[in-house]
Image (cartoon, rainbow, N blue to C red):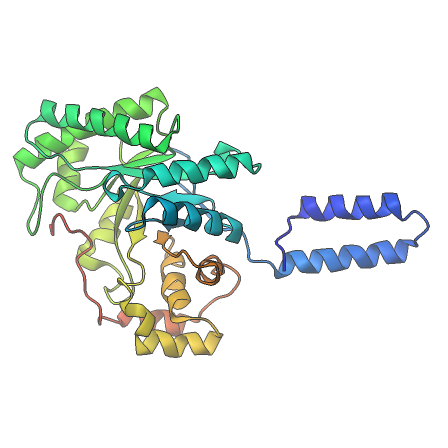
Length: 334
């Protein structure tokens, strides 16, 4: 059924009354019941989480990694039609023009910019030194904003620390990241970003950053899904202990969870897909989730996570699944 809110229901009832003044109160009441039933059948609104600066942030976002501009634009239109209001892109994705065009189309269709949550990410530092990394980040922000064709973003993330591979962030990385964060803090104070955060940050990288930061990151976006355990590398609990929201990317384990026998079996119990079970496990943990689809049916499934529950027994079984190990970050491990 078409999604209706209670304001829409009220307007439809009043319109009916205006044009059908001879109808009885009983018939009008019946119409109200029908419309309210239609409303209740629609998927529940996507919950909002509160960031550490007070900003309300949708728990579910559409990711557009690996999409070209045209596919990105189409996917966003379908996602918003399904009920999503949040988009996640990045400078490295090369599809910001498509994101910007989709936003223009949504606004032309009646949405306001304030109803759209936009997250972007800029590159880790490609050089060394605090000042050089600061200057690169200022340039990256300007380029990204120009491609998106927006005056502000709701959230911007450092896509990773200036480190690659196993191990921890050393002093050189700390200096580079501090330069990048200085550019982010300036962007936040100027109003061009409503919140600032990081992605793929491990404990050592956080300790470096937090020692020099004036503003605590609002979000840490990392890989997290069924098959990694409840707290891979203790990064979930560490991030949350700093009052930083965890946002999960690759929630389906790059597609592996779709065919996982355990998730398929649990899904049949609830008449849900294996993908929905994987996503439900995450949202029930209170983390934000980035999903990805350019198919209306899959997007509808993604949005339909908040009107049903799975048992504590099934949740525990999913937490015990260790069949799909992955490090939460591609940039560090400690």
